Every structure is written in C-alpha cells, then in structure tokens.
Image 1 (cartoon, helix red, strand yellow):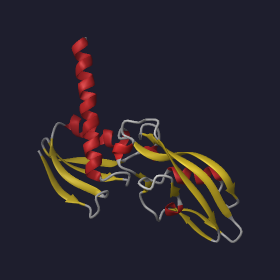
Image 2 (image 1 turned 180 degrees about the vertical axis):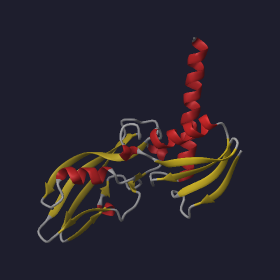
Image 3 (image 1 turned 120 degrees about the horizontal axis):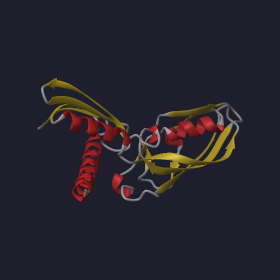
Image 4 (image 1 turned 90 degrees about the vertical axis):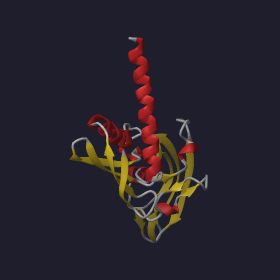
Length: 194
C-alpha cells in the first residue's frame, strides 16, 4: 500500500508518502535512493585558464557538486557514458552553473543559478569538463537524492524522498525500485544455487 501525502510543486522536488511494508524493505529503498541510482556528475576537468581567486581544486569540487539534469534513459545502461561542458567567462561578475555550455543541449545543469566563483576585472576562467555516470556509493556528487522515514504505526511508515535535480522524484523512486527488484532476483538466483 502506498498513499501520497504531500509533494513539491516541481517534479524534481520531493514527495512524502505512506507505505505499508517490512522495515527491511523501507530501509533498503532508502539506501538504494541514496547510494545506488546512477546519475551524471562532472568528474574530469581540463583547466585551460584560471586566474580567479578560486583555486583549480575548489573549482573542480564546486563543478562536481552541480546536479546534472538528463533523461536517465540516455545513460542508464552505459557506465562509460560521458558528456562534455565548456566554460569560458571573463570578469567582473559571478560565475553560475548556467554559464556551463553543454555539448548536448538535453543534458544541462539542473539549476542554473548555483554560484561557482566570483571574479573581478581582468580575471577569467576557461575550462573543459566531462560529466560521467556514477553512484552515491562512489562519491556524494553522484547521489540522486535523499530519503528518510519514520514509523507511524506498526508496519506503516511515512517516507520522504527528495531529488537533487538530476531526475524527477517519481523517476528516482521508479529507478530505485527497479534496482531493488534486480538485486532481489540476483539474490534469489544465488540462494537457489546453494
């Protein structure tokens, strides 16, 4: 039994629902959302020019934490999938995630107003970056979202799931359930062979 209690105004926001299931399933769903759903994040950077006050390493960290929005079908079965971004900007001003120019117009930063660096006159940043597929198990930059739950009655839980913007929250739940199902089938096959 699943009953939606509340949800955010935008598809990628959040959803709160009631679920009747064993604790082990609800916790497995939560852990799968946090650590097993693959998403894109910037991993490789070729720094061509950076004379801003933000160090190259800090720029790399900030770029890696920008959620990348893409249709999961694009990369779901391709672990070696990569997409390129270019950033070439001169100061003065603030560099935002929306300043990243994607090579694929359908794969973009989920939120265009994430600040990356501030620059004054004469400073500039020029780089090439590649987003790759990963999971939250590898690094938090590949977390698709966050989930938590509480028991409201015996065997009934209230669960809240928030997407970080890479995919709509309902798609995140669907992908997590699909991964859990595959893991269950693999485990069943293994037990059957013992």
